[in-house]
Length: 508
Image (tube, rainbow, N blue to C red; front, side, top):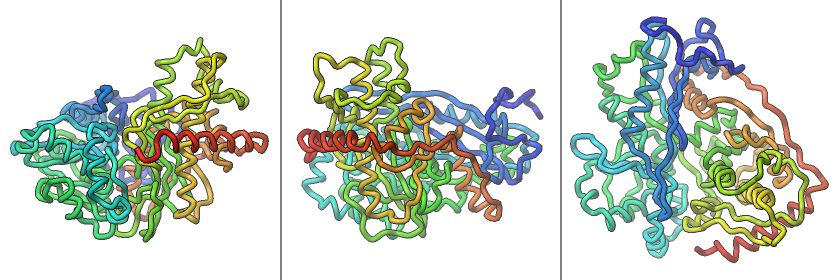
């Protein structure tokens, strides 16, 4: 094992893994920066994780009631440095690892000075303090025209309103910043001495022209910035140029590796569980959530509630995002007195007309209404409603949000044949998938796979590094088919959801 006595996870008992001696070359190292942790894992040419070669460093966003949602960018640099040191500084990997990739949570922003140091926290997608600036932009711009150009509507999670907010509230920071970049770009700058934005990262800013693949000048003007403060853009098959070899020599196992520009975790979450084609819709349910289809063409028209992010010259990712899925589950666990009743047990209970209706927007809504200032609302709560009933209402409300996305997806993704669900919430609350299947009226295939997002990052690199190697198959955990007896109930729940939504959120 070289200078290390053992692998980072010698007790790794995950079934979907391969021993290093049986791994198919080339190997790739995938890094993943999510909302709750930074992770890293080694994969072989089939996209199978190499047993024991992984590490995780937990973290959390700093949040506040005014909409703040940030993380220290240098903390993330240290986390990924630790992962690479433990997993990749190994003689037994030398010559075998040919690629290093990085995915991160999308729509992040870090201000960097002339010396290459961060002068701001990393603003995350959930930071909604730019809501007033968003309202200004919606008055100035035709939002449907914006969506047609960049593939996304105006929202607090995108960068145009965030730059305006910074200009109005922190003008000295705007003056000092020499460059602005995502958290992934900043990590590479610090570790490699160079950086670039992957096309998927650039698309998630809301500033990339989805047709040309370049920064859109009209949106840059609306944001109040110029192109020279942003990074160059690279497609997934283009490795980073000008990587400093003196910086990377600290990792013995990466001596022959190419490094790839950071991409958005939503793309990788799709690819990691098999959503690499137009026939598969993927439901991601982690801290945040989404429904996505990877299209191998560029649609002319995008339904108003969805986004369509450019991936490369041929592909785009169509879908809609939810701010609060796992975050809503955590809120239930931390806030309500459930008297020891497990949330999965609550999800497994029979439907009840006494269950309250819930709009699950703790940190604002993205798809389909894009109401960044929306907040959670409970309706039809009576004196007999207990904590379990309120929790059940929240779980049904989350399913309702997915249903709104699915309804619009049907217009633009006409070749979908199956729905695959994955993510930490589906593993912690598998019974919730029955609610989702009943609510959608379609079977939901449950894909349980550790580090599926990192696997997607690996597979994206392997498209260029091992194009002739087929990805390994992974058997699903089960299928949740809709129950006929619940159809009328969920139709009624959705009718109430839409009524309350129209009253409280629409137009906000």
